[in-house]
Image (tube, rainbow, N blue to C red; front, side):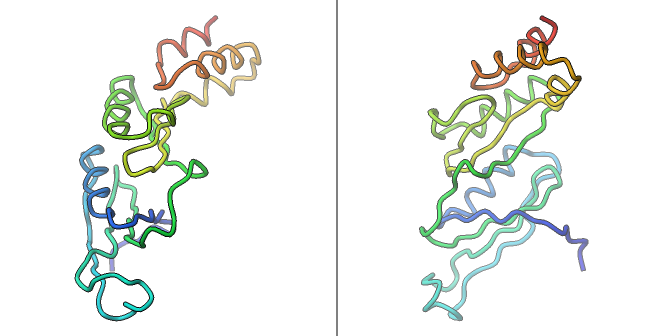
Length: 166
């Protein structure tokens, strides 16, 4: 049996689970892929209402992290109450994920490194060093960084570092 992670996020879609998983895998590339696709059968049709043979779940990995996408129907939608953080090493990486994941998403949901993709899932595209800018104990530096960040949609590492330095 494969080495399973203890916690695996499950993302609920109406009927776009496979398309969404493919989109996310293409955005992340390295160490990402579709691992397994399951299909609905006649069993439980009176409950799930899905045509037998249609995609039920897609098990996939993004940068080595496992997720599941479920075609569960229109009952539930994503909200900003949960988001997936993408910890980026560089501005180029931030730019790549922002451009790719924001494409077709709700532009009104873009603020302080947060975006909503075309499926309605919220993402935070942030530099790995972000916590360092807030945690060195200097309230003035942290305030300057916060003020700079609040004016941004996509985060700009150079501008955040400039604000930190004063």
